[in-house]
Image (cartoon, rainbow, N blue to C red; front, side):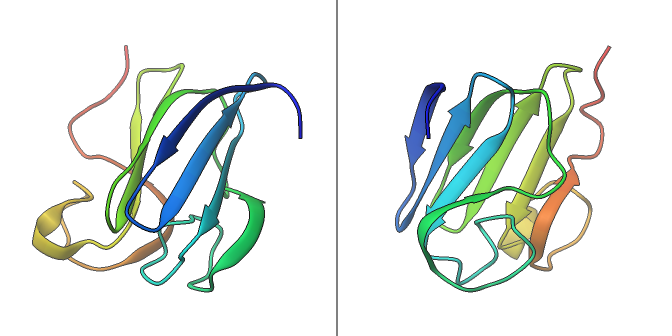
Length: 104
C-alpha cells in the first residue's frame, strides 16, 4: 500500500489513513474495532467499511474514531459506557455517526 498520511496504534489494533481519504485497519477485531463488518482479527490491513473523505482518525483500546472532511465524527467497536456516542451501549462492527457532532 502506498499513499499513507497518518497512522494510529490502539491497544491491539492499528489504523492507517491514505491520502485518498480511505481508512485501513489491522490487528485485533474482538470488539469490531477494525470496522470491516466482522469481529475477526486481521494480520493484513482491511478497509474500514463505508467511510470516505477521512481526514483524521484515532485507535483506542476497543474502539476507533474517524473525522471526515464534512466535519462529521464516526465511531465503531465496543460501545461500553456509551463510548461510541451514538446513544447506545452496544458493539458496532461498522462505523456509526456520533450524535450531535454534525459537520457544517
